[in-house]
Amino acid sequence: MITRDLLARLISQNGLDRYAADLLKMSRPAVHITTSAVLDDSKIALGNSKFGGAPDVPIGFEWPQWQNKPLTFIGQFRLSDMVSFDAEHLLPADGWLHFFYDLTNQTWGAPDQRGSWQLLYTAATTTLTRLQPTEATLPVHALTFGQSWTIPVLADDHPDGSYNLFAHGSDDLIAILAENIDDFDGLRNAVEAPVAPQHQLLGNPAQLQDDIRALSQYATNGVDTSVKQQDEKRLAQLANGIGEWRLLLQIDSDSDAFGTTWGDSGCLYLCIPISALKSRQFEKTWLIFESD
Image: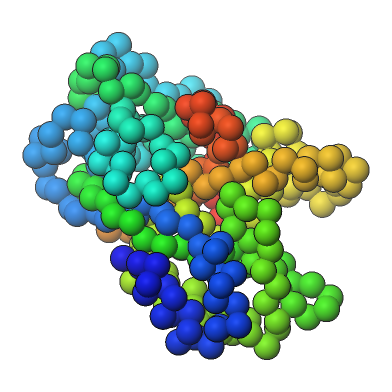
């Protein structure tokens, strides 16, 4: 795991001392997820955190579908497992999150793909039962959790030769000079390599392409960013809400855990407005899929 003290040393080792105060200020603790293969799903106790296998859900639960086909169960997270690692106390202290996704089509989060993923919250007072899927399941992996610090995200470059960094949950920006961008890449590698694959809740994302907050804001308001011609006035109006979005869950490519990767070594991100997270409205989560 990357502790805050280790992060401070890595910043210095990569020649970024001039930005150290801002980088530390905008770094975020994430709940890191570690996987461990389990041969038999029955070896995992009812309600324990896991990837794959059969979900432990409320009695009478209806399997999520999209376009008349069942979604794939990706994993469940017992929230009491991560209370001590959620430094910002953003997650519920107990209960479960269950994540289902259209694994066959690997939808990327276009406005017309709403429903191709579901993140469901189940209260701790609910009685669970293990529901066997009608189709093949993913390999079963037990999950353990820890805290790891994540660095700000690199934004687009600017004409003046600088690069902006931003953090989820902050309106601040760090301007990185072009001469230091390779140093920042070195820092990113030093921070991310020890915790690969980067499965996590909260924190700053290991973003591969565009700003996942912006993509979520636009898509949830019906804007398809894959279309070349855009209504710039509409985008400008929606841009005011980009900062409200936070990374909730990041699931990295992991062929060992899932038997597949997301596209070309891509990543799944579930984003949520901070107000919805605080009010436990997990149905407002939006999925973004990015690939190298």
